[in-house]
Image 1 (cartoon, one colour):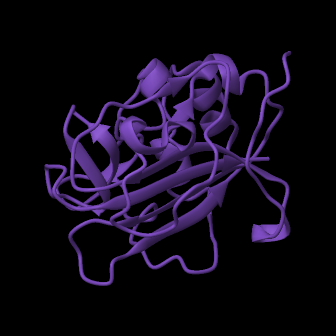
Image 2: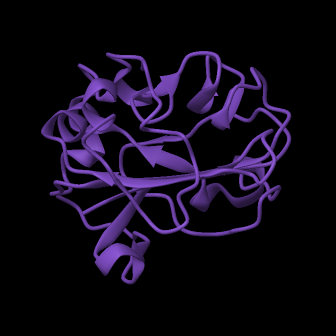
Length: 187
């Protein structure tokens, strides 16, 4: 495999985490960036910042299953904040279910029924997800990380441009009007 730059978190939950998804979304509906040869880098940590391709393209995007197959990992860490709920809530958990790892590496199958009980909440986690989830999309291929991989219908969603316009972190706004930060790490 070719070498490429990556952002690694050496302190969170014991360190060793490689970021494979980073979307710091402002109040718009930009295109996703499915990466097959590079990983997104860390940029802004401010809710409301906009790192879409027109502004900070190196920081925007997520790894496709093709790229994830080049990275050995057995754990996945999900983080998001923002949306329409007061607070706003923070989703921050990890999972090591084989089904989740397989879904991210292949884009086929699903992960939602496995992470509901197969997760560990991490510091700062205030969300009802994933314990509250009751569904998730399956067989999303390059959009496995973004197109509603887990949610509680009509209430709490993880969506990154889901259904083409929905940017949601533990909420259900059905639009892109609220700023969000979504990140996924593997180790």
